[in-house]
Image (cartoon, rainbow, N blue to C red; front, top):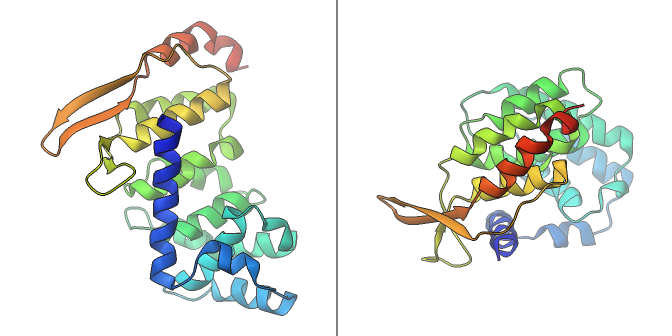
Length: 221
C-alpha cells in the first residue's frame, strides 16, 4: 500500500505539470524529434529565467524511459545548461531541470557536491527528486545522510484531495534506503503523528534502523 501511495503522488505531480503545459510527458515523447529540434530544446535551457517548457519536454524523455533517444553529448550539454540554476540555494527550482541535472550531469566535477546540496534543499519537491537519484551520487558510507529524512516534515494528501495525510518524503527516503542497502525489516504497519493539519501517517522506520545498525559496517565498505 505504501508503494501505491508513493506512485500515486509522483503521478499526481507529473499530471499537474502536464496540465500547466497542456500536454503530457507521453505526448512529448510520442512526437518525432529530429536532431535539430532536440538541439533547440537543449539550447533553450540557457534562457534566464529558465525555460520551463523546454526543461519539461526534455525531462519527459527521462520520465518515460526514452532518454536514449537523446544523444549522450546533448544530455551532457543539457545538464551543463541548467547547472547554474542548481546553485540558487533557498530558491524554488524548476523540478524538471533538477531531474535533468541529476540524471545527465554525472560528468561534471561539481556533480556530487551539488547533488548533496539538493538533498538538503528547502524546497520539498527538489529534495524528492534528489532522493530519487541518490544511487548516482551517494557512496555507501554516505547512506546515513538519508537517515535525517525520518524527521522530514513535508506533508501531502494521498490518492485524492482530502485523502489521508502522509509524510511522503519520509516514506520515499525509507524506500530509497531499502533499495540502496538491500535491507528491509518486518512490516509493522504505519506510525502517525497528530499535527495541526490532522493525523499524519508514515511508514515505521524502526525495522529498517535495527537491520541497518546490525549491517552498517559491511554496507559502508
